[in-house]
Length: 102
Image (cartoon, rainbow, N blue to C red; front, side, top):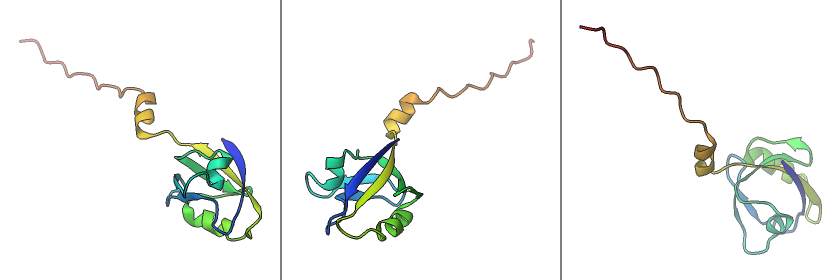
C-alpha cells in the first residue's frame, strides 16, 4: 500500500481509472499521477482518507477538490493475471478412484 499526493490541475490528475478503481492509463506524458509515482494497474482504495471501491466513488470524492488542491490517493498494487497465476498454489488433485480387484 502506498499513499501519494497529487496536485489537481484544470486537466485533472493525468490518469484514466477503470470502473473497478484501477489506474489503466496515463493521459499524455509526464502527467501529475505519473510524476507522483502511481503505477499502472494500481487500485485506488481511498481518496483523502475516504475509502472508495469503484470509479463512481472516486469521482464523487475528486469532485470535492477544486483545481490547485493536493489530493491524497491510497493505492495498492494489483498483480497482473500472469503474476497471480504464478503466485497461486497448484490446485489439489482429487484422489483417484480405486477399482476393486478382480
